[in-house]
Length: 638
Image (cartoon, rainbow, N blue to C red; front, side, top):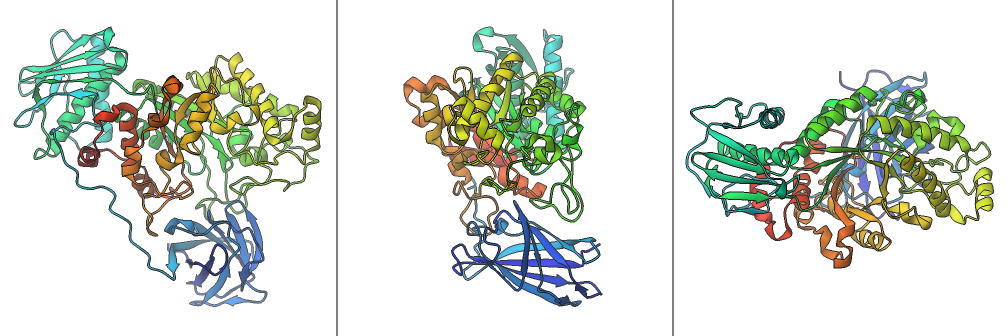
């Protein structure tokens, strides 16, 4: 049924320091309403409540804004309430910077769905989205992504029917063919199967050879008209070789005018980086287990080997912790009458979702089958608004409720290092995580703690005096040092965002930090002795807009990140030779504030995810943007 209300929104530049929104709420029902409130969620936040006209500001909680009409205002059927909102914390730059959802609450306390229109641009031309990919061109007619280290394959004519395990194939070889065939069929259920387990007169055999001198992730393919020899350095290398064969055969079948399957020559291949990662934020938007499993399949198709699962944030705690069931009852539910207010596109209906421990085990097992390591993240000490709503006992009751705000607008959202129960809580959480996740890494976040956090907490001030700590970040360093000791006791290695190094940081040796704020940060961390994964927002954050045009969706704090830039960025390019060993790899980050639909996800993540996969695998001198553009339309999407 269509909602009885619709909210139109336009942005006017230049009428205040950061422009203003002009809203129009239309009553499409049959009855007049009076004494109502309108709430909307938007990442372009209001910081001056008085800067509105024909409306009364009610409250703001991070991205949630509530307004009421002037007293006595009646919104008749077919009429509109028009009001403006200024005092914004930044200007709108793209169509996704306006209201993402809206809720109308009538005087009887009932909440009603409100349809929301795209953000219109007033005062200048609203440009359409750009063309992001050229048609591309091929010098070799092979559908491979990422492109291999060395290839001198000879293209054949016609279309090969199938590949199958040849004589001498062991049980593990046949199982590997079965696993990659199943991967292909999950990703391309209407595609022609590239493998059979039994011999076929229309196919060619694969001869498997274990060659430990290649390295565990390396493989080599030798092609002839009589079959394929697959040498591999271990199970992962065998999987990657089979994946390349599946890609070659699939491309030759789907577009035989452009792609061929080889009948001579070969491929020698091994990854460029050890850490080839993709992160997924499931706190801002919840992804059902089936979506997570499909993303893991996509990572395996592109030979990525690390899944960084961002399980907690201000907006929700998504991981079942049996010791603290409130985390996934109270700490995930967002709605007008819930402890957590709607955010980032939530409407009148409550929204929840979390991963049970059985879900986690299923995801970890699925990833292991695909040679992918699952690295879990609980974001601490900042980004814990949902945690602190669920577990009120983790707060200092003497601290003023709005003594500091995070960059996302959340008040008092960091775990307090001075409360003993904080450590009891984390010990229990890490115990359960250590059981669930076999990865040696646990990512603890450590990012975006507000400068000034905890300084109004008497308990924190007393701790700072006892320990001789000055300011927020020395207190954070003290806290993270204790967390690192907890992880060490459980045989785990601390991973975190680059701000973990603030305030003195933690023990650098054996710590892995992700440089996200800008590329220069990664080099500075390496100089301090940290191992580094490069994931700068300016190239590898897949929520960033891909064009400057108004109609191009996404975030823009790190600038404009078109696929060509993502593909061309070289993480190792600026690292001095003496620091190269500190660069452990690269990673894509999928932050989901803007991903309100599957279509938005696919538009923003692809083709940039396969571009990062090529940067993670392919040597710099073997990369070719035009070739990439010709092949990437074959890529699977979520």
